[in-house]
Length: 272
Image (cartoon, helix red, strand yellow):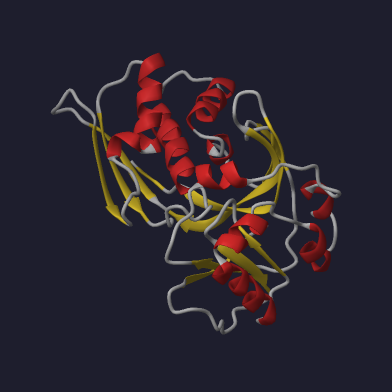
């Protein structure tokens, strides 16, 4: 069976404080975008072991450290099912703040539950996903959702985007989420993301903030220049996604972008 785990962008991201469990409490809106990995999950009747392979973009870790493998092992601790063959064709850039690894892991949970008709309640599926990665619960239902806590508190959030074209810019380097959080200084924002999102899009530039930008732009000044260029090109709103390195702009229509040749640009159309 072939599954299509999507990427996401963050519309606003406030890092509020560090929790006793070592994670950070955040608030953000996660919005799925039409950029997908391909994940094939099949029964493996000829062997008693699970098989994992990959193609496309190069993964940044050993197979046993990948969240796909982590999700599979976590399921096996609690449920019995035959061995499987998994192939991941990676298209979502790694280390870009787009949630690709978390999305792949969430779809392992969904795919194996479907393949073997496992009796897993929605609440338990959400708990399993939260154990694997902070963004994983979101990808169990890929629709705009407002996120609180470390990612386990989710609320459906309807948002009508006044503009439909998204320019996604991926530089030729990745950013470690772990490293980004180590350098972040948590703070309570004057305006929370959910408040800014209720304003007209013209006000987002001033009020809808990503707390990682200050640190990331200081370390990678070329990303700050990319943000400026997207605004010069007519974007209504530009932001880092997650902790980066991906950066996106919301436009009324596609336009020519004068960016570094080292950057890869994806244009896509967003739905409500």
